[in-house]
Image (tube, rainbow, N blue to C red):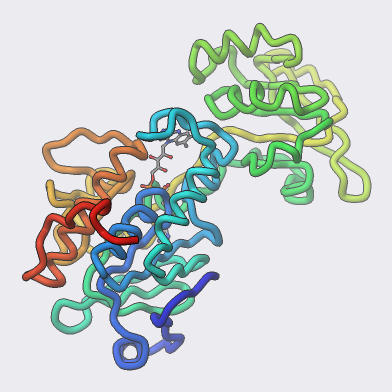
Length: 355
Ligand SMILES: Cc1cc2nc3c(=O)[nH]c(=O)nc-3n(C[C@H](O)[C@H](O)[C@H](O)COP(=O)(O)OP(=O)(O)OC[C@H]3O[C@@H](n4cnc5c(N)ncnc54)[C@H](O)[C@@H]3O)c2cc1C
C-alpha cells in the first residue's frame, strides 16, 4: 500500500475514536475518491489542482482499474490526444498526473462503510482503516471484479502458473503451447494478439457463434497460426511437479474426449462484477449504477459519482474513458464549491498555473 503525505488513516475499531483520531491527529480530507481507475486518477489530479486534501482508495494493490487488470497490454484508440496508447502506458501517465499534488494513495484498501459523522463530514471505513472526509467521489467502476472460472478439478493448483484469467504480460506466453477458452472479444483478441508470441494456439468455444467482433472472428479463422475448435469444452487438466502439462477437452455433442499438451491455459469466459458494500450506503441506484444529476451529485449531500459506476439523469450511459474523465472533472469542481462555497466553480485553466 502506498501511503503518502500527512493524511494517515486510523486503525481503531471504535467509530467515534477513529473519527477523532483522524480529524485531530491526521486531518480531514476534503475529498475521498473511491476507486483508482482512470476516472478516479483523473479526479485526483483535479482535486489537487483545486488545492483539496485528497485521499484515493482502491481495493486493488495497483492503480488503473479495468485497464490495469483486464487489458493492460491492449491498445486504446479513443482517448483524446492519443492516436493509440497501451492501456498500461495510459495508467502510468494518469498516475503521474494524479500524484502531482501528493494525494494519499491508499491502495489495497476496500471501502466498506460510509457513515455521516457530525455536520457535513463522513467517515469512510475500509477493511484496513478509516478516513474522515468532507466529500466523497465514488469512481468504483463496475465494482470489484472477479473472473468467471471453469468448474474443473485441480484448477487452483495451476492458477497463476499454468492457468490464467488475465494477460498481465504477453511475455508469459512466449514459446508456450497455449489453450484459450472462450468465444467473446477477450478470447478472440488475445488469440490474435498472442499468435506471434506463443508457440501454438488452440482456441476452444462451446458454441459455434462468437460474441466477438465479426472482423476479429474472420481474422481468427484466417490465421494459420491459430487452431479453432467450436463445440469444445475443457474437461480436466494435469501436470507434473506443479507444472501444467496436459488438458483434456471434449466435443460437447459427441462427448468425444481428446488429450492435448499445453503449457498455459487462458480462460476468458467473462467477469462477475460486484459493487458490494457500496450498494448498501443508501445511494439511489438504477440497476447496478449510482444515480447522479448533471452535477454528478448523488442523493447524499457531498457524495458524488462518476465514470462507469454512475448513471447520469437525462444523459446517455457510455462506459468510456473519455466520458468518465469529463464527469470526474465536473464532480471534483462541484465538490470544491461544496467544501468552500466561496470558491469558483470554474477551476481556471491549468495552462495558466505555474508549474
Ligand atoms: C476489455 C476492455 C476494453 C476496453 N476498451 C476501451 C477502449 O478502447 N476505450 C474506452 O474508452 N474504454 C474502454 N473500456 C472501458 C473502460 O475501461 C472503462 O470505461 C473504464 O475503465 C472506467 O473507468 P472507471 O475509473 O470508471 O472504473 P474502473 O476502471 O472500473 O475502476 C474502478 C476501480 O474502483 C475500485 N473499486 C471498486 N469498488 C471499490 C471499493 N469498494 N473500495 C475501493 N476500491 C473499489 C476497483 O478496484 C477499480 O480499480 C474497455 C473495457 C474493457 C473491459
